[in-house]
Length: 248
Image (tube, rainbow, N blue to C red; front, side, top):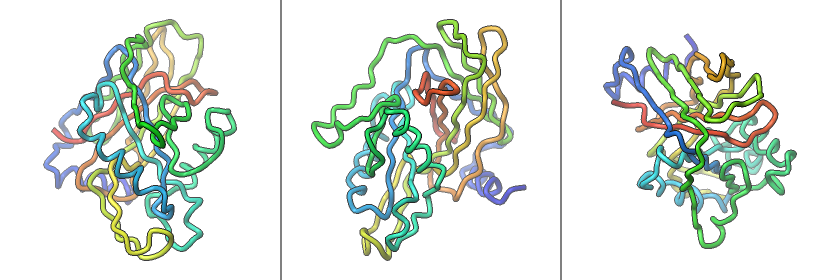
């Protein structure tokens, strides 16, 4: 068994979550907004953004109308502090947004809301997630470390393949930074991506579905969650998202 998957299993056992119990996470029929933060422990401008996104734990629409995720990029690691949550895959994801003109340039802290650059964090910080746009429910069922995902779009899609993105998120994380721009600071993280994978959904009539393992994780966290979102194969714009706690 992969050591990172072992870490996830160990955490779930410590959290008294039965691995045989089924955890069901479902979105409503209306669109759930995906908020992506690109951040780094090596960036002196990032702690305020990390602190702000942590406040979304108490957002009234959390998991129902809003799914926040925090990707730690690796392109700040060279200045003296290697962010243990960073990955070149996350940096590449941000660059793909820039190449598709959804993002003007690659920077941290950087936010995208529903696949579009969101700069309100630097102004009045008005986060609008309410929508009555009906896109169809996304359902996630987790049992014995396996994830079964089903998406039933409201409107018929001509795409043969949609992509399911799955992340395991960590909460209540603390890091004592010993070098770099945030030297001697204690950083706190929530909604931190500990593991990420993308996989095609397969179409059967009007339903898209797949069964897969949860992504491997870097480490465990005091509290954890799973979220997922669907986009077209050649378009990173989220169609629907779902998320929930990895606990009973």
